[in-house]
Image (cartoon, rainbow, N blue to C red; front, side):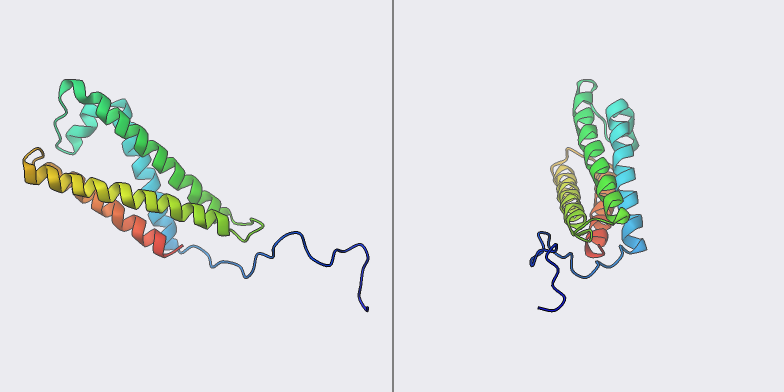
Length: 159
């Protein structure tokens, strides 16, 4: 056998990463940055000042309902932080698998974003239709959630 080297195994213990993945588009990177940053900032607002943050969306929280805003704020901070971390990992690249695991993780985080925001849109529609949420509040809050759905879909399709 020509070119045989006794120190090299016949079969590699690690899998070849295959061809390199294409770079994340600038549009996807920007959408991810906006999605994660705005979500986390809104979460901080809900956590620290739930009544004030609710008023920014023309929603009146009863005095004892601040906890609901704070709980939602915690959710927003967590999802925003996961989105930003997954984005950072994908953009850093250099993983042994060519970044495939990081992209898979990012896609899962984006799916969570899309589901949560879609549910927010549905809740706004139901609230407006049942009269528990004003048209203005449903439009602003639901509109923001719909924009987030769009950002998530754009990023998902381009990573």
